[in-house]
Image (cartoon, rainbow, N blue to C red; front, side, top):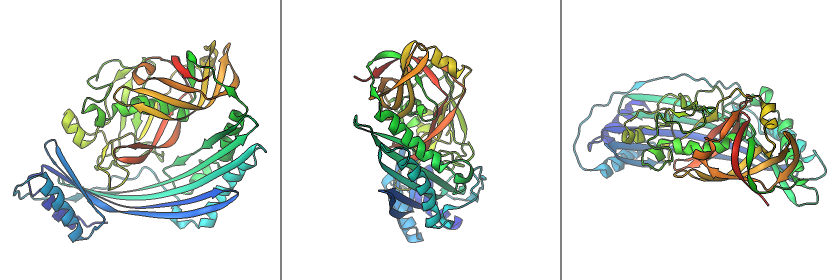
Length: 460
């Protein structure tokens, strides 16, 4: 992408005014998307993102400059802007880069760009029509097949020169059902860090479409949830979005380093129920949020954030690590070269527990089973959140009863993880895109079935 020799010259210019660290991040990314609506392929779109950034540190000062011109002249101008913004000086520093190959634990068998659009469209159509034809109440469906080929290069004044290629594929289906009580929407959005082979063994397009339609159909026939404080069982997979949003962001150094986290200064203390062990693991082979190296060139790690309720570590990037006096945990991520990298999650989940899943439901005399979670909002500083329940059911006498719509979960992250008093054994991961200061990045959320002993349920 950029030669090692050119990177050395650019880095020398970047540190010439006294920076104690400099970094080049370059990328070439191709996004390809096929979209379907109204029983036909609606669009085929390609996007290319290419450019580079130069970032410099001096102590706790940081400056980033970006450019779309990756010629030598363009990169030198970019380095000069960063160096000059950092301050005046005249430092001559020798930069010697050594290429490092970290290896790839995410093998890709069929690179999506080698597959004809017609073949991709066939996969999308099978999922789309499985949703559209699920029931006559399905009045609309939409579908998208996305593949991303993200190539990055990182060179630093510490001597690192490394590249990585990240290929991801995702199928998204949404269905709308109308059973005479107003429309309801269901969705299913599986993805992996894999190529088109994902549809041979991991993602079933027909099952994806049916799952989206079934959720819409079920909720379209549901009555409204009653509000109140009650025990809630939260389903596995994307149910982990509660931990991701209400607690995960508060464990990122971008919040902790500035004291803007509910968990700042609490390392080694109990912040969760002893049943809770929470992990951020960027090393899971072919998982949606996995990486080989982060966007500062640090190898991916499995970081145990909370172990048996005790806070063990945070997710840390290099710059915020300076503020905290702690080393990077391989957690630096960014959407593209146009964003400044910071600490972010990869695959974040509550680990499996020892409770029987049937016993979790049986333990609830009256409460809610939140089978599928939706979006919501959270304040990382306080952990206060509000999340929609996409698919919910009332639980009475230890049995799952009628479906209910309009439910939401309202609470505070630090309180909820204390109230998780049962953790099941069916760990699964759900795919999403997480937005924060460094842009939108692919992340997994996950958990087994869990029980929150008491939480506010919004409804009617």
